[in-house]
Image (tube, rainbow, N blue to C red; front, side, top):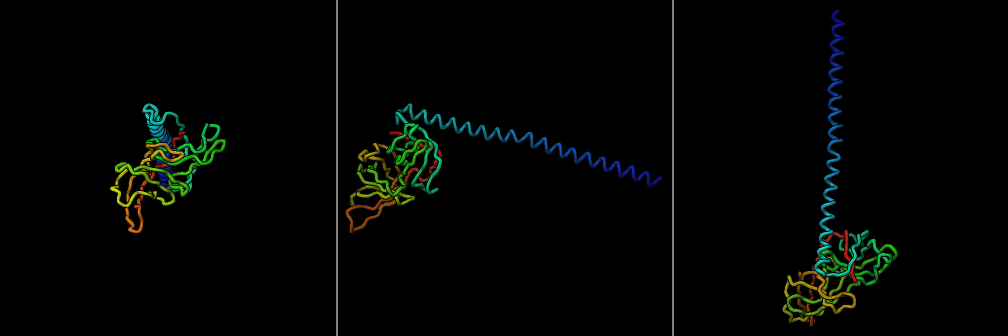
Length: 222
């Protein structure tokens, strides 16, 4: 009689244990299935918000007529990964991209120019590239010099007179005297000025505005 009672108690405990295990399992499954779509929706909403923001910025660029005709391209590769000298974009001949088209950010910060065009992609050499030589003008003194790449993370500015009144923080723009770049494109700010008594010119370093730019999309114009 006692043994039969024990078996009933054990059986009852097993049923009770099974009930709680199943309940917890259902709760976990419900929780996972309920929250997963919410997380996915949050990600999708964030992507939509960013996309709308980008489109508004591009529309504003057109409305201001700063750059009347331009194309937007996605960056598919950069070389090297930090301060890239070469950038590859997903637009080419079939999209109307031409050699020496200028490339910049939506804020009109100069990135570089198209060097090579293929059917469906193009190669851009950036201002960090050692091939880069651009005529520029200093905002405060209106003096014209040349910036050169190959000195990442900065650019080297040459041919500013030794007695110039240039100062740290002055902005640097394209002058319009280069073969490919029209005037007024923003390049960066002066961060270092040194004087060599044996030279007629200053040694100036410029920090580009694209110093910390995330290369995802670029704008291309003639």
